[in-house]
Length: 144
Image (cartoon, rainbow, N blue to C red; front, side, top):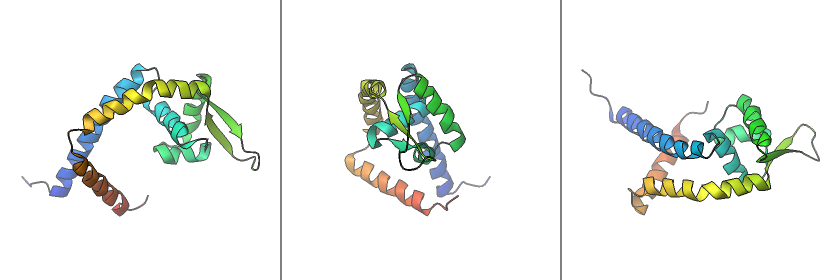
């Protein structure tokens, strides 16, 4: 039997850790009545302000074909609205509503607390090293 390389081991460990963290945080989000993708869109709009619909997919790692569906769902819930760009009719922005802001402000602190709880197994120095290592891997990965 061939022993896996350190690179392959690292890939497997990173994948398992990501899945565990994602599963843990997604269960909380889903209990609040939205799915993780809807949460990601709301969180993006809350922290970064209105965004062109065409750019949301890239920012939250979602296929562009799915954006319309997610935006439609959030719009029906009253959490966001579409706003036409005044200078370019081809562009439509997604903008968080007051209800969306209120909803996110109601659940985000607990979401952040859950992430802190998970990550606090590392010291601040270890977190900084992990951040730099993940950035280095991300930058070295060939583009699509």
